[in-house]
Image (tube, rainbow, N blue to C red; front, side):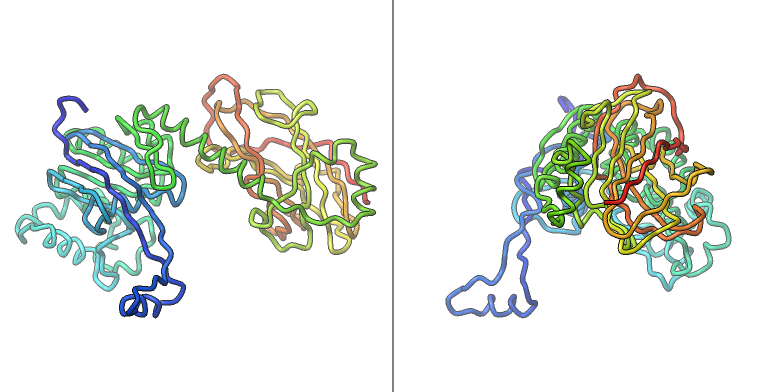
Length: 431
């Protein structure tokens, strides 16, 4: 930042919201003779300060609810800060919401001209840029159809094309590129790297790959405050640690499913380390619910997983409850990377010669899989149980989402897309 003239200067910015249980409480509070308070305060941002130099690309990352979008809204002038100041030096173009500023009843063509007029461009200037906008958006004849008929992908194509066509000195993007297809995302990134090198970019994204590759510097927000500002790699590491810490805190607050005393005693007799098995939070479970995962254990070499490497055997053990006997059960798992992309997984349908059945009541289930060669870094494990004969036509009875997190320490290797990684050694016993 030394020697750089700031394009954006954010100084001691805070944003506080008043939350009312009922809408009329706002009126009562305003006119109450004794100034009685009817609201609770929520501070979305607390004393935020940093600068963005001209031509610099700065990323803002953080967990959901950390204040990222609120900050961008303030920078763009759509929200007013409760305290503090923001100075913007340069023509700003923002992509804060999908097709922000588009009238759904107007055609794409009409919306482009309307947006250009709002930005201060004459009819002649808009016409001179129109073909360039349409070529970049690549939505064909849809340019003359109402925007309400557009898919989300077409909407973001046209919105982004319009935003960059005004040759902005400052471009602000809030998650917008995550909506487009992979080819359009690559096209946008290439354009920003090659054509917009002198443009100042402020980017909010959950795509850590884009953050690491596009940004000169990254700000990490958590609960409305800056917890890190600096190198992209270290920022991503800080963000990942926050995610892991949050998962651990959530696990500590879980209220275990109450097991009948006789069931608990029986399971403890069969499983020596049952007391170490983790309960599953109701908020983390989805599905029809006729089968539920009540407790689980995920271990490597008999120990709880914290790190893992290629060739390790992962042992999954479950205590599940079924409302009645099920004779066409599908067991499965999915492993996701640090930004939630599914990397690999499989289900018991891969075992053609084995049919999985569950008895009514409680069952002990176990299976295992081998950890493959993937990128080093943090991963989460999702466990699932379905019912049916086919992968494409079955009932999802229970998904326990992202209930385990750990770090792969395998040397970095190029792995692309999702792939199947078989499970095996399935064992079932009724309680």
